[in-house]
Image (cartoon, rainbow, N blue to C red; front, side, top):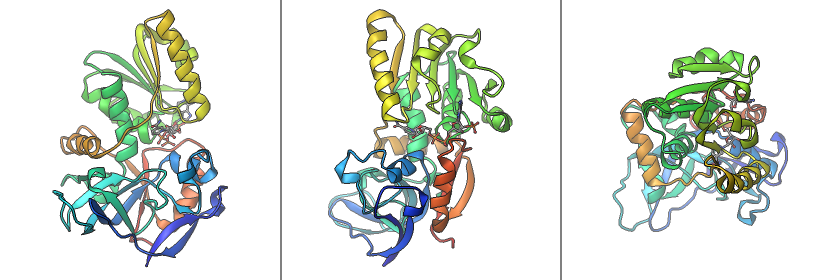
Length: 322
Ligand SMILES: NC(=O)c1ccc[n+]([C@@H]2O[C@H](COP(=O)([O-])OP(=O)(O)OC[C@H]3O[C@@H](n4cnc5c(N)ncnc54)[C@H](OP(=O)(O)O)[C@@H]3O)[C@@H](O)[C@H]2O)c1
């Protein structure tokens, strides 16, 4: 048996509880991972609250959590380069009924990557969804290039703090948008300019940006067009169905009427992306900031505080901590 976070109905933080459940058994092509650390993402509380209730596979009763890091303790057979004892990290599907806030997870071999020696388990668990989003949105989708001007909203948050680092690694000029308490933190990440949104509205500034990465999903294409270059790209993390639809529709219209683009981002994770994150981290281009390490029992309250939308870096649950 193992300890795992579970919930039986959609609702507020109090629907979550730690339960004793059977340990998962790996099938062919899968590995059983002893979870040392699992990081929190806003997606977790959105699933708990029922924002994705239209996906039948994701309905309770079920576990919660996607991102994890740990060591392989068993495999289910099949050809694989993975081995018992290997330090790995990855992310389980948000629609899997067994989540990563548990002492063990089972994952397909192609959902895992090896943890670089430079990272501990908490730092590795901080990577998949947040850093994967930053890398895929800025590099794969927006093709960020040296000398471009990039603005990142939510620059102190899980996604944003990685996005600032990715854009700087690509030698872009970066403006980070955050609240007063995070100004120094975002500057330390390497941002060339930090805008405090409690004092100034970046959509009314004089600057023009090649890429606006709305990591906080705090703005809209309509609002940022004035500060987008003529061929500029607005990418939103589309934190709600409404934001995704708005950005998609405006993106279609923008393509017909201008050279600007609006893109609602949706992460496509997996081994190749996790491997890329590991390489960036090993090279020092991505430095996960773990703001807080908590116990499994503290995850419900931490997710509740995350709902306010003012996180700094990542919060990570350590499975060995009570
Ligand atoms: N589509 C996808 O595939 C995908 C993938 C990953 C994440 N997401 C979504 O992306 C969003 C952000 O995720 P996250 O992990 O970065 O969350 P997070 O760690 O909670 O960070 C959110 C950040 O937004 C900042 N913020 C709040 N209001 C703001 C405003 N008006 N202007 C600028 N910044 C503001 C907060 O900073 P301050 O404290 O400084 O306000 C905080 O640092 C969530 O909605 C998440 O669900 C989507």
